[in-house]
Length: 286
Image (cartoon, rainbow, N blue to C red; front, side):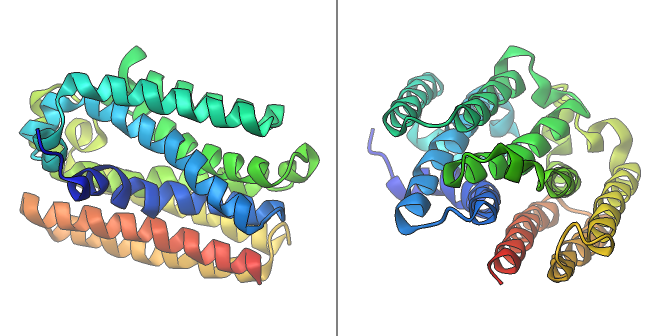
């Protein structure tokens, strides 16, 4: 089999890794104040192995349903389902070998291990990916709280300094849950046929949009509270770009009538994840 390297990259990296997880971890790294070129390079490798391995496992578990939903077509063309398990195990082995070489702090080791365990629970062990709200909560914890935490403890081993960021981590987790729901609107047909209980399948589009908007409002009300009570700098107000774009995305979802439109909106949503995180990185660097 001739493997198209760009197709593999497109399937695994140019989506969740670059748009969501890496910038989320970078927020934590810059918040830790332990930034240098070598640490940034290390972050890209470690968070890449953590996240991409989890997505490999998820792709393994969703192999048949992704075919129905016409997702990850390049992956299916270049890999077999069985091969993904070997890829996953190799990536996990390399990840912990690097952690061993780094003599990582217990906080970094713990946060990485929790991310790995959550990935297993989500995709194969308890099959939470097919249940709501379980799937959204685990995604929020992974791409919000754990990504930030891994980045932070790559740059610092100060648990007391990390605790100061907990309110922001809670906001980031809730906002991630809210924005993540968008990815499921386009997959209702395949998800329903395979008994994948996403919010759009269980509640329908109209009610799911209401749930999503409510979660976004709760998240950004928390951000407002943190700014007003000076737990975060005033410049964090620029993070509301995620709220504005998120509300627009919900509006577009409500107006959309075709699967093609909803898939395009799902890409816009990944860009919103990315934009929100980049804004926070810039704010922290100010």
